Image: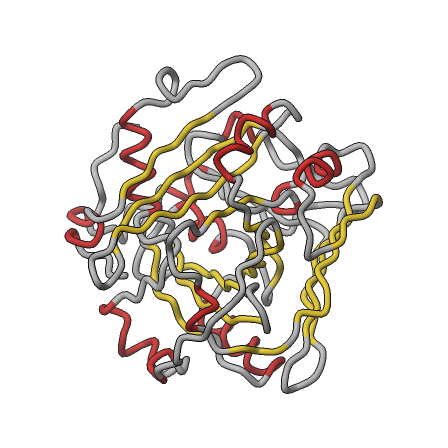
Length: 336
C-alpha cells in the first residue's frame, strides 16, 4: 500500500477505549484522537510497499520475485505472528538472512509509526514481522527503536488471531486490562472493501509479553504471498504466576504457543535452510500508541544488579524534539 494521500484516504479507524470505570470512546478520547490514529495506522495490515523506497529495497529482498499466492487454512484463536524489532532495517534483514538463508519479503513503510517492515512465513498460517526505524520518516515506534540502543533482532510483541477480537474488548476489561480496539477499513486491489481489526491491551506491566489480538476478517492474510522459512517449532512465553496474562489466555483458550509461570521470558524457535533458529528476550516493550501513556505507566526498571531491566527505553522528550534537521513542511498538523 502506498503512503500517498489517495491511499491514506481509503483507510479509516475506529478506536474504543474501555475500562472498568466507563467507555470513553465519546468522552476523553474523541474524534481528534481517532483522526490521529488514522494517520498512524493507515498502512497497517497490508503489503504497504512505498514506491519512494523501491530502489533501496530491491537490493535487500526478493520482494519483486512474484511469489504466487498459496492457499492457507486460517485456524481461529491461534498464534498469528511474532514481531521482531531492530534498530536498523538493513542490518535486520542481513541478520535474518545470515541465520536462516532466506530473505524476508519487504512490506514497506508505515510512515505514521516511523517504521519499515518485512515479513516471512512459517509453514502454515503464522509468520514473523520484522520492524525497524524508517530513516525517511519519524513516528512513535520508530523513535523508540532509534533510542533503544538495541543490538540485533529481538522479540518485540506477538499476536493471536481471533474472530472474537471485537467481543474480547469488553471481556478483557473485566480482567483488569484497558483495551484499545481498532477497526481498519480499506480496499483491495480490485476495489473490494476489506476490514481488519486489532485489540491492544494496556494497564499491565508485561509490555510485549502480553499479546495483542487481530482479526483479518475479509482481508487477505499476509502468509498467502510470503516466502516460507520453515516449520515453527515453538513459541514459549513465561510470566509471573500472579500476572493476569494467565487468566487472559485461560479465558481466550488460544493455542499455538505455551505459557508457563516463572520469570519473564519469550522465545520463538523455528526450522530454516540453515538449521534451527531462535530469537529470545526477557523483556519486550510491545506496541504503545499515543493517548494510552497513562494506562501503560512507566516501564519497570531492574534492580541494582541490572536484573530485569527492559531492553527498550522510551526516549526523553528532548530526544523526540530534535528540530535542527526537520523539514517543517513535512510535519503534520497536531492538536497536541
